Amino acid sequence: MKVKIQFISPLQSMVGKSEEMVALPGGATAIEAIRAATIGEKTAYESIFNNDGTLKQYLVVMRNSLNITMRVQDEPLKDGDLLQLLPTASGGGPKGVAEHKVIRKAHGLLGQ
Image (cartoon, rainbow, N blue to C red):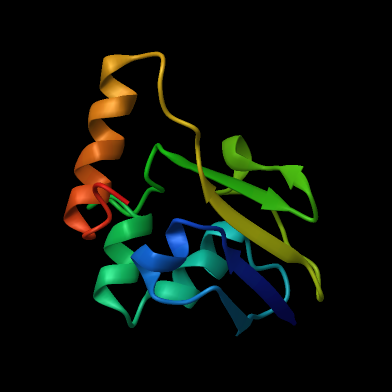
């Protein structure tokens, strides 16, 4: 099956592309699709995944316009699905703001 993954700004700058079409075996999950789209590209992979292979906390994952962030590990995909990854809006809390600044600085986006 084929699944399209879109990286919504500012993730586009972080991963170096706006979208990726991945071919997966039937029954693959959303996390497997995201991993397949970034595995060969160190900067992209490190922008999306923690060292333990889980998604970074600042990401929201949408499947066909529905938020699946809390079940991304188990969400089975179908041929033609669209996954969209976008950063959460930050603010309101010092931890979220600080983490967002670290991410932007690491990718040369601070001040933009």
